[in-house]
Length: 382
Image (cartoon, rainbow, N blue to C red; front, top):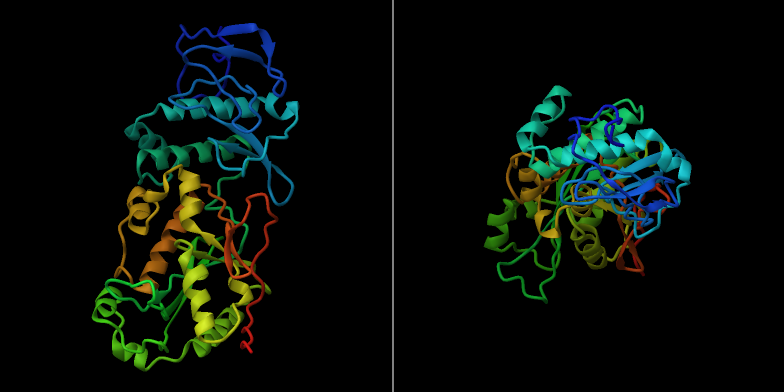
């Protein structure tokens, strides 16, 4: 019997002809397993560089490494998920545990399944069957991983009780010259409960622009925000005060942990940053860190940056845009739908960007996880 024939719970049996050859009697210094090589079988940890499990793969090496969760529990990370270049530091006993070999073996079979086979298997487990093939593979792998690690399948795991999805709309012109100053004219928030995976509440207020109070026809047609909307609106400092009060009423940062999530970097690093300077107020502390869902989506589903636009992300997940494009509130709701699906698929959404000294910076995945502080109205600049 071949060395993989004994693996339990595989999706399909291994062909009898599969007979890997032992390479000079060498053993992996991490996994303490014989190093086998053949056209079908190879698995090298992408972090530590050692062959730590022997599994069939299709077109790529399945990377298996262990990470610690915020509570100190060991977690299994599959398929080369990013770890900021840090090397795997797990002991040999981690890799010798049969459960990790079973997970790796199953991932190899999943990689070779057709889209119809993936959908059938997901339906069997009563999981979502919409999405492109890579999304379906990721969904099935994460489900199987949780099952084998004896984790009860849940709707989603999150470091935060709530996620505030924010997608500003700002003044704009058709040609958008470099010297044009963008001002926020819509401040929406969609409050996503990460336990129930439901949109629990929403906030929306229009903002009166100060530098360019007259909206261009291009801006009106693009956003659906009329001149009457902004003429009757409050100035940004008052709207921000209303936002702070709305968040306080929902006990964000006090009773419940939360963070902000955006579609890209611009909402916080550009639009809010510029608007605070225009309004002569300091940048709010609760908005200094956020989840850039484009980065999270690209890293989780292993897709290039040019496939992380809002409409493309929805399409790849098998969803259509709901509402009016470029409405801040509708955009935020659709971004929240993507976040919900990612949590369902096993993604652990966490802060990955921040503002520091007025500059945009990346937050390492190894940095401690902490929610945003209780919202406070920033002071006015001198």
